[in-house]
Image (tube, rainbow, N blue to C red; front, side, top):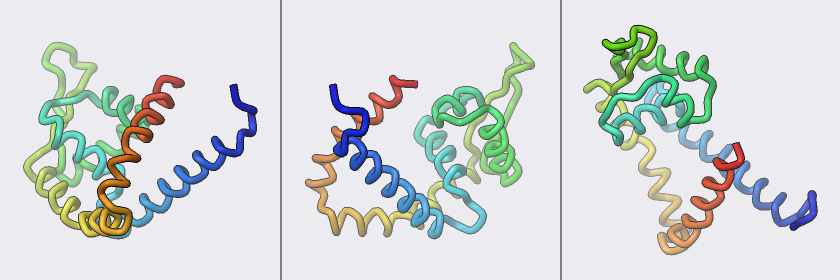
Length: 147
């Protein structure tokens, strides 16, 4: 058991928090006009998933309130990037899927942020990044269990 103010844990979380803040700021600068990082994250998930998700499932996945996810989905739907349809069996529930325009917008965003990622890999090296990933995944999973 470590002390409550363990300098190692504090340093780890401080570095992660600062890296997260800097990464979000850097990516937000290069995303296509009008696209927010939250929009890209949802589009990216839907593009990889290829299925439909409910707003509640997306809210849980991104650790957001249902209201915050509803706001994001409303903006994506207004831009034509997603389709929201009712559940034919339960009118209280809806399903969300990426649209062809959303796939195109996501692909444009990936092209815009690729130079940021390429630079990080070039500077830090692929091997160092590969070696850090297991620790970061374990940390994420541990934090997810604590919810």
